[in-house]
Length: 398
Image 1 (tube, helix red, strand yellow):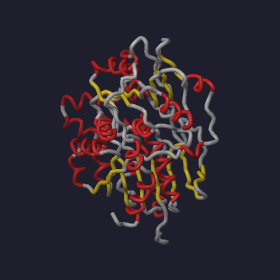
Image 2: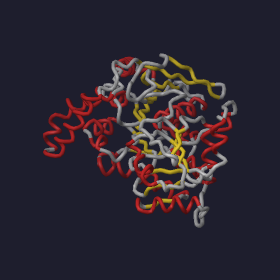
Image 3: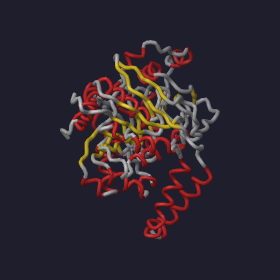
C-alpha cells in the first residue's frame, strides 16, 4: 500500500458489534474487511445503541481486533433523544408543502431539513466538528446511508476529503427531501448495494446518473468465527418443529401486520430480532428475542421458509443469507431489491392474495420448481471484494 496514504473514515449513525441493524452491520463489516487488508480505518459514529432514544450508552472509543489487526470506533455524544412530537410535525409539514406547492417546500427546505434531522437524531455536532477539524488525517470518507444527521453533515462542502457515498436508497418520502440532493452532489463516487437501488436513485435524482458509481452489495459473515457462541435450549427445542421464520427488526414499517394477518391457522411463525411492534398473543406466533450468528444460522437451516413482506428495502441481507444457507425465501412481490435477489438466486415471489396459499404449500412440503443458487450467491457477495474496490478508490484506480 502507498505509505503516503493516511486512513479511511466511515460515517454511520450507530456502530458496535451488538448493533444488528442493516446499515450499521454493513459499516462494521466493511471496516473490518478494510482493516484486514492493512488499511487504517476509523468509524465515526454516535454513542447510542438505540435509534429512537439516542442514548449515550456506548464508550467513546472501541478498538476492534480482527485477524491480528484492528480498527477504531470513535463515538461522539448525542445531545438529545429523538424529539418525537416535533419530528412528527415537521414530517407532516413537509408532506403538506410538497403536496400543495413543491416550490414553497423548496423555499423553506433548509429550515425544514434542519428541524427534520435534528428532531430525528442522532444529533451529535461533536462528530462533524471533529471531522471538519481533523479531515487532513483521512484520504477517503465513506458515508453509509442517507437519512441521519451525521451522514448528512459529513457530506457538507466544508469537508474536502474524497467522498464515497453508499446511498442505501429506499422508495420512501424521506429520500425525496432536499438534503439528499446535496449529499449526492457533494459526493465524488456513489455506491449502491443493488442495481435496483441505483435505478431508483437515478429515477428520483437524475443528477446521480451523471456521477461515477459502483455496486457494493453486503458480503457474508464468516460464521466459522463464531464458535464461542452458544445456542439457547429454547431454540434447540424449537428446531424440531415445523416453523416459518421472520428475522430482523420487528417494526410496523417492515409490514409486520401483513404477516400477522395472512398466516394460516395451522402455521407457526417464529419472530427473531429487535421488538419494536407488539406481536399478538396467538399460538401461531412466537417471539424468541435477538439471536446470535450461530442461532441465526441454525434457524435459517431448519425453517420451512423465511418470510418477508417489507416493501421498502435498498437490499435485504437476510434474504441473501437465507439463500446462501439453502433456506427458501417467501417474499411479497414489489420490493425491487428483494425481487432482484430472488429472481437471480432463487426463492418465491408472490402477490398478496397468494401469500397464505404459498405458506400452506410449503408447510405440506411442496417445494417443486424451487431452486436456490447458494454457491453462486456465496461467490458474488464478499466483504473482501468490497474492500478491494474501496482500496482501488483510495489508490485512485477508480
